[in-house]
Amino acid sequence: MAGFNATLGGAEATSYISIEEADNLLTNTRYTKTWQGNTEAQKSEFLVSATFWLDQLTYAGTRCHPSSDDPAKPQALSWPRSGASCDGVEATCASIPNQIKTAAAILAAELSVNPGAINGPIGGGGGGASAGTYTKRQKIGSLEVEYEQYSGTSVTSCDNCNDPALITAFPWLKDVLKCWLVGVTGGVGLMLRVRS
Image (cartoon, rainbow, N blue to C red; front, side):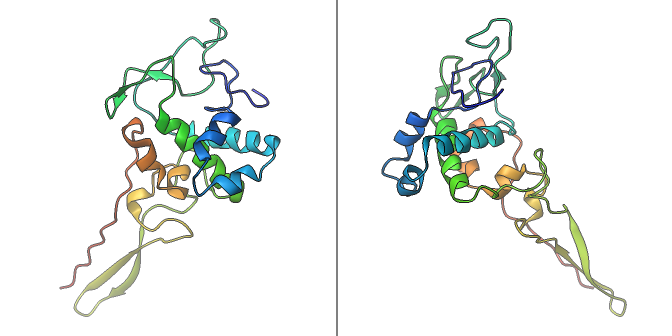
């Protein structure tokens, strides 16, 4: 796979949406000025990067097969899919849901402002931070143990320590992708401290 290719279900597709679709989705949003300031080549690069990261997530349903443009090859990307529905919309091999397209456009715009916003391993790990807690303080008299979560640069709760780096960097994606997205925890962490 090389270059920009937004063929729906294509064997060599590298983007969920075309530059024109991204332009339309980002018109009259807070991203308009920033996005329109990019060249066509830059827009292509950011859309491919956004699609790459979105493709690392786990989605409901099943990837369509074979590809739409070569029956001997599978489609390159996770979308389109079938066998799932979200908010009353059935996934089909003939289209990509608006939530996925919107996520790709907004993420591309975000990456155009900060190309290095996503750090860490592709499959997860809380943005490169170590998962878990550590002992902040121990006290022998009256037996007191205090734990604290590793805060790193982007992890604020161990509820998201195993979330993909993309979701850790851009937690709003959970709201955009809604029920198409599976396997992401998120939420607010709760730390209990016990004293005797």
